[in-house]
Image (cartoon, rainbow, N blue to C red; front, side, top):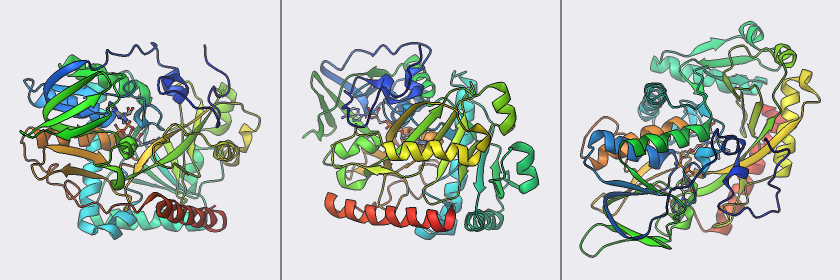
Length: 458
Ligand SMILES: Cc1cc2nc3c(=O)[nH]c(=O)nc-3n(C[C@H](O)[C@H](O)[C@H](O)COP(=O)(O)OP(=O)(O)OC[C@H]3O[C@@H](n4cnc5c(N)ncnc54)[C@H](O)[C@@H]3O)c2cc1C
């Protein structure tokens, strides 16, 4: 039976094993999760992967596809999908970093364009992965719609249109007010950027489906196995330690995303930032009719602190975004924020006033990994390039992490491809300053974004 309003409250410490309260996606899986046995004793593999989210599972899956003889083992602290992969909004989308404009500023036009191409391939790749393997994850290729809801947001969307026009990128439609009104019964939207190749899915089902797929190809997965540390062996290779065992391997993949803050070797390269989600009861047929939303696309607005929202298969509204929260150090279970939840619930009826009175049944949050320049990286620890990490996918990692898994597998298997030659593979990442400085700076930036949204982008 579905639980009523959150089993999770802001002050409650949720134990690591309490994954069902971490998102409705995890809670509503068709089968209860039965965790695999933990890593025990002294083990050996060719490749050890730390973290059983999309990045780790996709790496394991692609390694086995590239070379079935490779012995790859995934070591997951909780259960696969416990992290962002089991809690996200479920948008499969082409965004790399924050926006196209910012990626161009940070790198250059050519690299931003290459990143867009990589992301288009990532979205198409995930589509093929799901459909060819028949992963049951409520996948709908219903598109992605970026909307401008104020004159300032319209200027932002127009700016992105000018960029892709210059690139000659295809497959993106411009929706004017009339087209938007055919799809949605709201006068909130002024302009739309519609990308039909994108889609929505049930993220936890995808994570569990990827686990099953990797296992089917022969990858071994240990759950309830928190890695307490890893180090390089004197004779080459790596050793990964958990409370009950250790795993020695030639290659090491660090797929711990925002949790990477727990490892001294990765701590300064990224910071965990929480984004939050609320979800309504299923909308009745008449309520659905009142709002339209015929295309069923996932929608994002063009504010600084964006809102992202979508329908579930049973027509609940999932609304995420708004303000983000930060954490000091390792406190990665403080993932709830009552103020943001209230803001998100209000925003549903701002967009669709006809939904006044709907009930919200679930609220949750999760950590995303943020690099100082907000751009992703696949990087290496050590000169032999045998320890590989992937960080900084922020809130745009569903398709990206799956594709990065392929890129990491190619790096390990010694295949040189256009993916392994991407500019963000092996790029230098600027370290975040110490915690107090970071928090001070981020609070100032966040405050500025909130103010800008209130007076400019609302
Ligand atoms: C609320 C929310 C909404 C989002 N919405 C979207 C969206 O709609 N579209 C989109 O593209 N992206 C979205 N994202 C981002 C996306 O979910 C992530 O980029 C992606 O899931 C990251 O996958 P990952 O495998 O790298 O990390 P994770 O899924 O976080 O996996 C890391 C894993 O490492 C494990 N771990 C941690 N510490 C250890 C340890 N010591 N030992 C072993 N294992 C460990 C964790 O338990 C976890 O399972 C969202 C994220 C959040 C939180």
